[in-house]
Amino acid sequence: MFNKGNMCKMLKQAQAIQEDKEVLEDVIVTTVNKTLRKAQDEAQSHMNAVAGNMLGGLIIPGM
Image 1 (cartoon, rainbow, N blue to C red):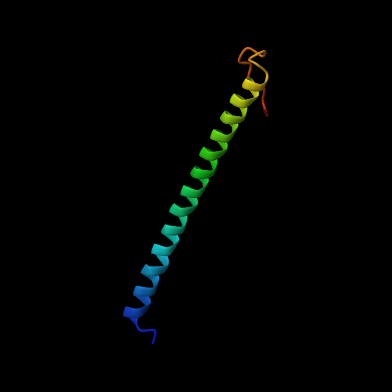
Image 2: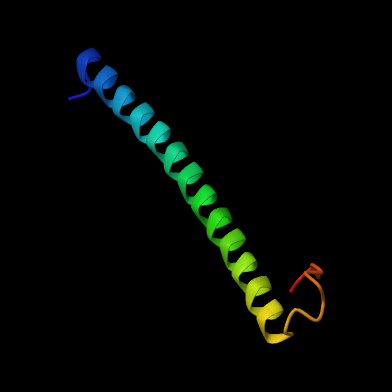
């Protein structure tokens, strides 16, 4: 059942799964950060539109 050939194959599969997991984690983090940045930019744009540009393009942190 666990001969040398099977064990090598299992180890290679485990390593491939780990590498895929790391790539997937990187993709998720990048996507979430990009989406958050876009949402913040849009929120700022809407805030400027609502304020009628009274703030003169002033960027307020957290808005």
